[in-house]
Each structure stands twice: as structure tokens, then as C-alpha cells.
Image 1 (cartoon, helix red, strand yellow):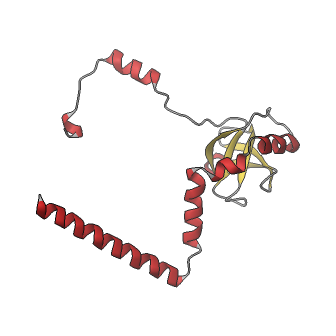
Image 2: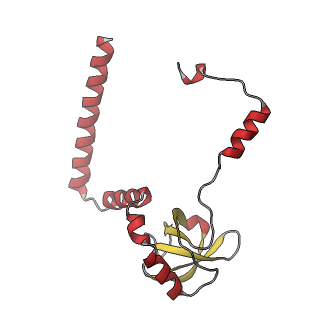
Image 3: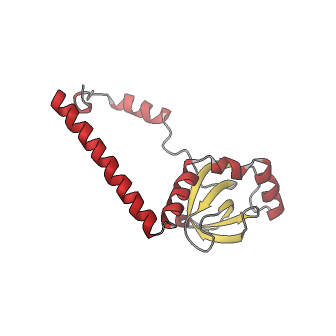
Amino acid sequence: KQWYQRRVAITAGEYKSYLSTRMLYQRYIEVGRVCYIRLGDYAGKLCVIVDLVDQKHLLVDGPTTGVPRTVVRINQVSITDIKIDIPRGCKSKKVRVESEKAEVTSKFQNSGLFKKAEAKRSKAAMDDFGRFKARVAKVSRNRKIRSTVRKLKKSS
């Protein structure tokens, strides 16, 4: 059946219990959360939230990645799944020790966010001939897909 044929009427109580069993957010902005800086002077580097300044600013520190203790806006960072156990406002040495103990960089390199950032970086570093080769490969791939779809439509 199609998705629109599978509609089922549920009561308000069932819906409430469904929402209570399913968490809406998995990652929270909290002390010890590892972030990837997307924008600004330290773009492309990892940092750890040390303190929350206000609703829009974070105090971050990245002693292993070369990010000094600085204040960044929340919209400049992407939150990762990685969290280390540090107290609020701790010193850079404690952040370094805990992040090395938790192997933050190796965990981040296995994440989808890192792979997406690397793909974006490699695409931006392409020269003219590289962009041309990518376009030709995309066109040929789409032709193959289109021809197989047509064959399948004719056979059915």
C-alpha cells in the first residue's frame, strides 16, 4: 500500500504516549559537548563547549585543534554526538586531557559531519578541469539511469 493509504485514526492518549516515548532532540547544547566550527576565524576546527554565555553565545576551547578559548555564536557551530566529561568553566589543560582520553578527533573523523565537510572542501578545491570531469561523469551517470528507467517502463 502507498503511504497515503495507510492512514490510521489514533486517539489523543495514544498520540501523547507516542510522543513521550520518542525523544525529539538527541543533542543538547551543554558543557562538554564537542562542536564543529562552521563559520568564522576558526572554521573547520573542533572545539568543546566550556560555558554558556547567554542564549546565543558559547565559550568554547579547542586546545588540541588550535582554537583558543573564545566566545562564538551558536549559529557558527554544528553540534556533534560526542561529549566529554568536564566541569563548567574548567581550564584548557583539563579540556585537553579529557579530549585526548575520549579520542575526540578519531571519533569525529568517523562521523558523517566530517565526511560531508571533507567532500565540500575537496569540491571547493577543484580546478576548472576537475569541475569539467565531474560534470561529464554526472551527465553520463544520469544518461545510464534514464535509459534503464525507460527500459523498465517499457518492459512493465
